Image 1 (cartoon, rainbow, N blue to C red):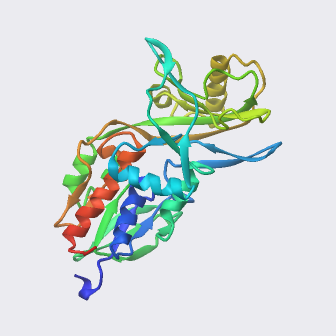
Image 2 (tube, rainbow, N blue to C red; image 1 turned 180 degrees about the vertical axis):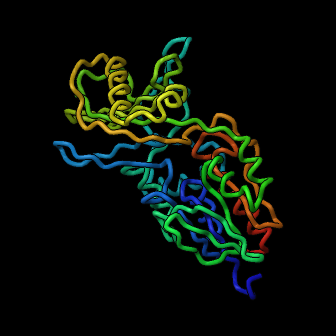
Length: 337
């Protein structure tokens, strides 16, 4: 293949799945090129730095924490814990549904240090990641592929292309080159989520640091980002419910922030003016219906897909999908290691 040179692999998307795939390919001697439309890798391992009277603080407005239940991912996590790149999640977490409010099931969680995106940066370390590089088309060049970017430029050519992006985006890009993969991707269903955050007084403190809600209101998740520190203010993160997010998907961000922060204040019984209000809209946030397989790989076309939408809405499942697709790619392309 490719005149005896190592196969060239492009990965579209540098979230957890794309980074896991890239790391496994890199460990076997390949040099995958990752393209991501964001300003930095990580996808929903997203963090914002905000200014406060006590200095800059981070708000994780995507994934709040993750678990490690499988042996392979637990081994990966243990290595990062040893390097102090992630740490156990020690928040007091509760859930509320029609049966009342109670602690979340006992399941050790982990968070990035000092924020979730910092762990994403570690995952991306030593990988070739092109940020601000949204791929608009996959173009066949004989047995190889080139990518057309949003700015109109063309990439170099690749022997294989992996799509580690949300299912609707993957389906659109694969519609012409791999209609069967595209059709399968369209069967997955992802829900949107509006995220909002604000600063509120730390006292009086509620009996929880994070609360998952499963009722009729607009809130699905609220979490105090400082974990109960002695700071005079707490940064609170809000994730709206899928139903509310769908209903208000195209609303003005300021109106969304006002509605969600008002709902948070009512939940916390705090009648004070919040500060540092911000929002972020996740169009493809939560897997509602997964594909049911770990990945897709067409060994003839050298095209594949990975991501949490294959297995379910967990960081570990995104990592598993990318890692296992990389194994299939290495076997298909006859790469050792």
